[in-house]
Amino acid sequence: MEDTIGHSDTPDDLPSGNGDRLPRTFARARAALEREEDQHITPQIRNALAEIISDVTTGALEACDCPIRDVIDQVSGKWSSLLLMALGVRPHRFGELKRAVPDISQRMLTQTLRDLQRNGLISRHVFATVPPSVEYRLTALGESLIPPFMVLAGWANAHHGAIRAARMAFDAPELETQV
Image (cartoon, rainbow, N blue to C red; front, side, top):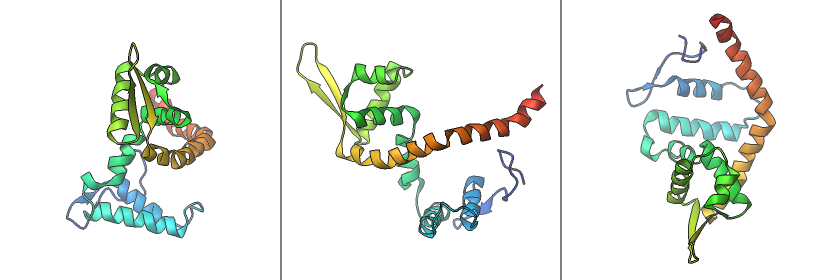
């Protein structure tokens, strides 16, 4: 059966341990774990992935307690990641962050900073000056995120060309049918 992105290598849905149907995404992930062709995934990583998928698909891990849904979602947005990178260099005032990420709106900058502060990744410091000034900086928790985040950013940088080429190849048949 064909999934939403045009692949037909997995069944539409698979039964899970709690009687629900698994989304195709999990079925594809589980099938990918069973393949041995990917040289970058060590057996230890493969086992850890299998445990995570098993916990999610069997209902052992509630959606609200899932770290992937809860934490990764909060730090992986384009604004969050850019702001974390800027604050990883040094503390910034609001206006400096606005200039560091010029295409972010003031409202989105404010909301993203609040979200990062709520998650304990950054802290907000108000200085008693006239006018008052505010500075944002990474907390110890936020600093602990930077090394793994930089590994992901490095991977994205190294593979950006390949990903763009894959998108163009994928979109080419669609563009041909529109002409």
